[in-house]
Image (cartoon, rainbow, N blue to C red; front, side):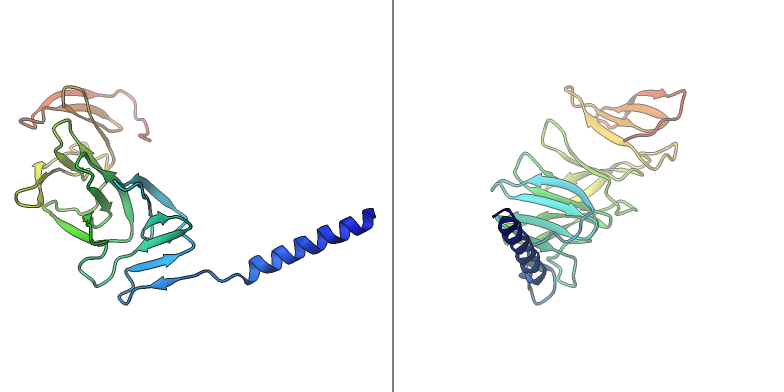
Length: 215
C-alpha cells in the first residue's frame, strides 16, 4: 500500500511538471506594439509601484509599464505611436491628489489618460531623465531632475524650470521632501538644503563633514 501511494504521488508530480512545461502563455499585442496583454510582467527588474483611482496596481520596470488586471498584466511599451510611453525605462510612478497617474521615465514624463494611453508632457529641462515626482501641500507638482527642479504649469501644460542649478556640488543624486511648512528639502551626499517654495530661494544650507551614501 505504501509503495502504491508513493507511485501515485510520483505520477501526479510528473503530470503537473509536464503540464506546466507545455502551458502556453496568452499574449495579445496591439498593432503598433505599444500594448500587450500577457500572463507575465514585461520585465523582472521593478522600479516603482502605484495604485490608481480605480484600484489598479501599476508596476514600473526597466522595460515597460504594467497594469495588473486580475490574473493578467497589461503591458505598455514605447512605440512610434505618439500616445505610447515616452520611454520604456520607468523611474517613478506617482498618483497625485487629483488622482492623475504620472509616469516618470529616463527620457521624459507622461500622464495616463482615460483612453488607456499616455500624454507626454513637455519638460523644459536640459536633461529628460526624471529622478522623482513630488507634490507639495498646495497640490503643485514638481520634478526632481537632479540638475534642476521643474514645476508643472497646468495652464501651459508643461514643466518649467524653477531652480536651474539644483546640484551645485555635482553629486548627481539627491532626495527631496516637503515639510509641514511646505518648504522643500534637498538631501545629497555632501549637503542638506532647504528652499522656500514661494520664492525658491535657499533658506538653509548645511555642509556635511563626511561623505555618505543616499539610499
